[in-house]
Length: 310
Image (cartoon, rainbow, N blue to C red; front, side, top):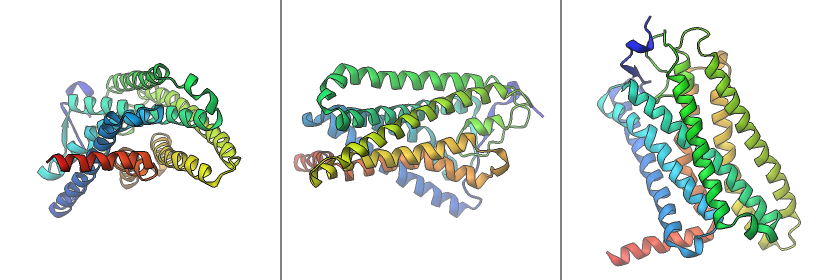
C-alpha cells in the first residue's frame, strides 16, 4: 500500500516479454510515427504553401494535422524508448505531462472533427450562405474555440486525476498514462469525482457525435438530390473520409473510457488505445489525401518542387 505523495514514478505496460518482440514493436512504432510525421507534415506544408487551398475545409484540416502530430509525439516516443531500452518506468511528473498533452491533443482532434462536419454541412446543404457562415474570422474563432476547450478539458481532468490519493501501487496496465488506468490505482470511492467528470465529458462527446450524425443525415439527403453523378461523387469524396475518421476515433475512445470493468483486460485495453491514439494520426493524412484531388495535386507539386530544387 502506498499513497500518491510517496510515488516518484509509474510502471507502464511492457508491449512484449521477449527482447526480439520488443525490438519488433520498436520498429513498428518507428514506422508508424514516421508515417504520421511525414503525412501530416506534407498536409501542413501543402496547405500553408498552396494559396488555392486557403479555404475553410483545408484550414481545419491543417489544424487536424497539427493535433495529430502532437498526439502521436506525446505517446509513441516514450513507448519506443521503453521497447528499445527494455524499461517500463515513467516519472510522476512525466506521467502527468503525458496525460495532459494526450488529452489536450485528442480533445482538440474531436472538436475539430465536429467543426469540420459543420463545414461540410454548410458547404453542401447551405452553399449560398457558405461565405457568410464560414468566413476567415469565423473559422479562426471556431479553431481557437476547439483548442481552448481542449486545453480546459485536459487541465481539468489532469488536475483532478493527479489530486486523487493512490493506494494500489504504481503499475499501469497501459503503454502510456491514461485516466482509466490511474483510476484503478486510486483509493476506494476517492475516484467518484473523476468518474463524474468523465461522464460529463462523455456526454459532451455524445452531443458532438449526435450533431455529426444529424448533419450527415442532412448531407446525404442533399447529396442524393444532386442531379449530376460527378457532383454526387465530389460531395461524397469530401464527406466519406471525414465520416470514417470520426467513426473510428469516437467508437474506440468512448468504449475505452465507458466500458464496464468486467470486460476489461490488458490485451483489449491495449488494442483499443492503439486504435484511437496511434492509428488515426497515421491514417488521417492517407484517408484525406487519397480522396481529395486538390490536396493530392498540391502535395505532389510540393514533393516534385523540392526534388527539382535539390
